[in-house]
Length: 323
Image (cartoon, helix red, strand yellow):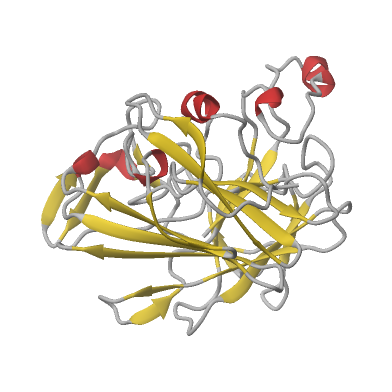
């Protein structure tokens, strides 16, 4: 169980000595632990389930050395920007090409929001509000961006994460929650399935850059695509219409041992466009990481299937869904 104390507690320190705090929020049967480092959701649990529903690491040292954005809020632009370059209002911007291989930009750079300390602005028993300032020029982006991340737990057992950003100059902003889910009681998600309310998806190339050409969903447009985890690869799912008026369900992740599916809803509003949009679609992919399992909370090491396959010991596969 996640402890019930409400005030921030010291989780660890960054290399420069700055403290990283952990806060715990909850309501009803759902409880979460959030770090000020990267606005990370480190732990998420339902009363009676026992094990965490997300992948989280045991120490700050593990996050610095091994985290693949586990539970973080990468930005100012999540995902990849091809060739580390974009054009805005007729001007070309060159970004830090921080993805391994030095070809693409990814997740706001090596000092992006998901790898930086945030400040606690407000804290109640069921919500926390975090704030960060991303200065102009960081990773090559124009404009200074101030972002708040509000994480709230509702009585109905809903974890709601809301981002709001303001910039002093035109610039791309596209944050996401980069959570990895394992709803079962085992070390991997081999028994999980995911349902995605989408009539199309965007395939990715070898550099994991989405194509501009939509492909039809494997399911009929009037139903949800249902695919087993570890079979989907990486796909950017397009949730139908180009505008929405409010948050709506777009996907759910299912595991037999949990009993009930975990639904996902999303939506966003651009003040510049003055409308709510779904043109930033959810992305779901299956993940396999070369990180020792004992660094994760609540899941004992089990390397037998790795040794049989001849692969490096690692965590079991986890599913990431982000929006």
